[in-house]
Amino acid sequence: MAAWYVTTLATWVLSASWGGWLAGSDAAQTDATRAFGALAAAGTVTLATAALVAWWMSRPYRALFQATQRLREGDAAPALDEQALVQEIREVNAGFNRMAAELARAEQDRAVMLAGLSHDLRTPLARLRLEAELSVKEPQALAHMAADIGQLDAIIGKFTDYARPDVPKLQAVDLRQQVEAACRRFDGDSRLHIVMALPSDLVVRADPIDLDRVLVNLLENAARYARARDGGPAELTVSAHPEPREVALLLRDKGPGVPDAQLGLLTQPFFRGNAARSEPSGAGLGLAIVERAVKRMRGALTLRNLPGQGLEACIRLPRANADT
Image 1 (cartoon, rainbow, N blue to C red):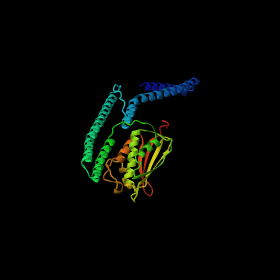
Image 2: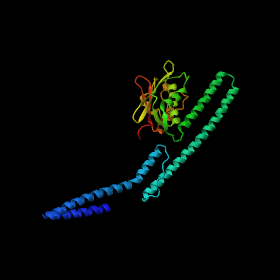
Image 3: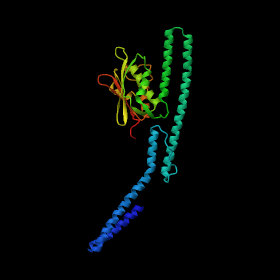
Image 4: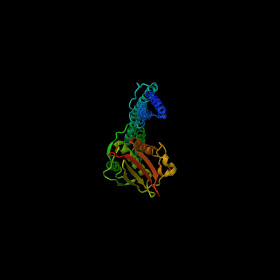
């Protein structure tokens, strides 16, 4: 409103001065020059006032956008102001705060439920394993029963990993050390032969537990599904390419790959690929867990078939020392 009054006054002054200038007097021309200056000043004040009003009015919307972004990324959203001057903004902020509180409560309930479910299922499995070891005398039958029990335990672990609601604790992680630690779990595993080509100075911003879960799932995936056609071990190459703001970690196998039409489906929960890369012992959650964990760490996962044969998994993670 103040800006409108200033503009109206400046326009009136200009009109009066312009009329006098047309009369031909020097004084009128001087007044017209002054009027132009007044109009320029009035225009500057008007623009500054409009920018200030626009900034003030957009503050609640910026706060809502930032809170929504944090909620989408899995972080705890800050409470929005429920005492705003505008009634509609107060109602929107109050509704958002209630929604964020309900989501946090649902995540906590899910965590409690998963912990109880995992305990309730694994306790009888442990008893079955013990009873089998005590009562089954034939070694081959005992080995088969132990493998079945181990498979059930692994499937339970996959379900709990996929549904894990924890917020990742991002920190600086030495990528080479993390990959080496994951690969050591497969020492002596005849299914997999790993070749590493990683620089020693790559530090990424990640959650060590989530990153370990990602690497172990990808290594297990290669050991199961990328075996050589003659039954030999799967050949897997692990390398990394640093970029200004992120690091691309590449895991490339020499297995049969998958049809291009199925690449986008591999990260969907419970999806199984073609018979060459599928076996009944899997839960269909390995790559879904990988993608979910990578996204939680502000990264990205892409899968593609390599020329000739083989599958490449590319994980992009932010560098810890990148400018923010």
